[in-house]
Length: 156
Ligand SMILES: CC(C)(COP(=O)(O)OP(=O)(O)OC[C@H]1O[C@@H](n2cnc3c(N)ncnc32)[C@H](O)[C@@H]1OP(=O)(O)O)[C@@H](O)C(=O)NCCC(=O)NCCS
Image (tube, rainbow, N blue to C red):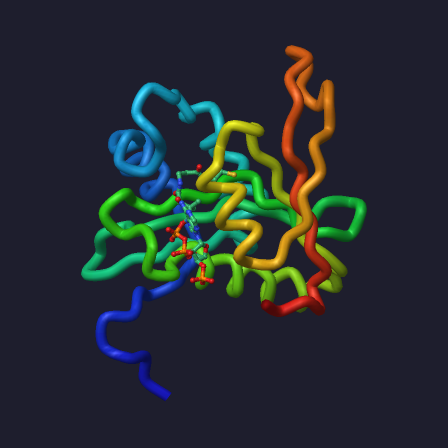
């Protein structure tokens, strides 16, 4: 079955993509937040099979870096959609692909985290049916994080 016209193509992330993303980081993340530290090469070299990238006409619209954690859940390390491409379901599409990839590998649930002030991320995960829990002292700096979880069988 062919994809509807205009729907982004999904594939895994390559090292060359990380270079483009790092050059254009402020298009994917809020100004003033240096999120470069999330984009280590290991997420491609070691966990590339469970990464997801959305592109149209060879332009990167969004990406998800994630892997299967030893606890048997899929962990989303980073997800971002280019500012101009938000609000049309691209992150949802990437999460659906990640959920399929993890289900094929025997995972039972998904986990992601965010800073408590990231209201976009909290609204997005709520829309996808994730529960949220504030875990104090999650970070070595003492900062708390919101932990999102969802069973892989739950499909909102
Ligand atoms: C969070 C983010 C990835 C969402 O990407 P997106 O492609 O715009 O999200 P989608 O269009 O797939 O939205 C899916 C659902 O989430 C909801 N949602 C997404 N962003 C929202 C927002 N800012 N406010 C309210 N709801 C939101 C949508 O309404 C949609 O619900 P629906 O399907 O029931 O209509 C994007 O805002 C982003 O890249 N933010 C900067 C990077 C970041 O903070 N990443 C998260 C780190 S944990």
